Figure 1 (cartoon, rainbow, N blue to C red):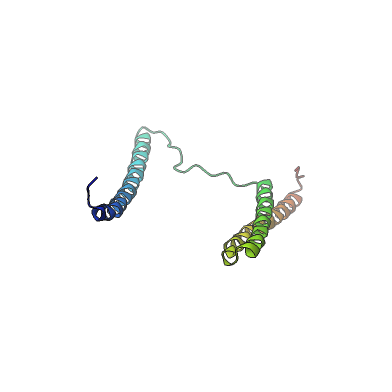
Figure 2: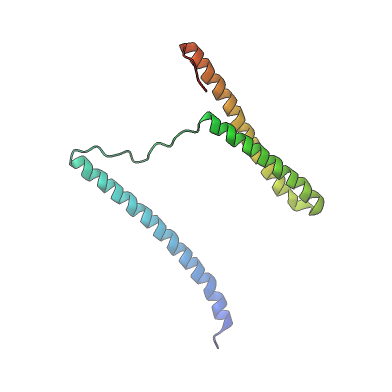
Amino acid sequence: MGGNPSALAIMIPIVAIVMGIGVAFWAIYWDHRTKQMKYRERELMIEKGLTPPPLEPEKPRATLDECLQRGVIMIFLGIGLGIGYFVLLHSWGPPAWICGVGAAIVELLGIGNIVYYAIAKKSKNESSQNTGSISIP
């Protein structure tokens, strides 16, 4: 290996950048080609008189129980990150703020899920009382 080390040092970033851009362009082209084939398939189905399926299947909405579960998990995860913040604060010093910010974000998301659960459950109960039907949990 009697090559010039400085030439190798210059080639590595150039090759990495070119390969990265190449992979990105390939992914964009592949996505375009896939969509093109899906639309062509739908076009052929319509020409034959068939009803094509929807392009994007409907995502199932989260149930109230799932919102409550997510909220409780996020609150306890936030509490755990908060404890980690105080441990890191007293052992490492300044970099602990990342854990503290993460704790605040996760806890607020958890609280948001629980508030949504409470509001949705209350509105569900009120709508069932207005219609005269009985809701079974």
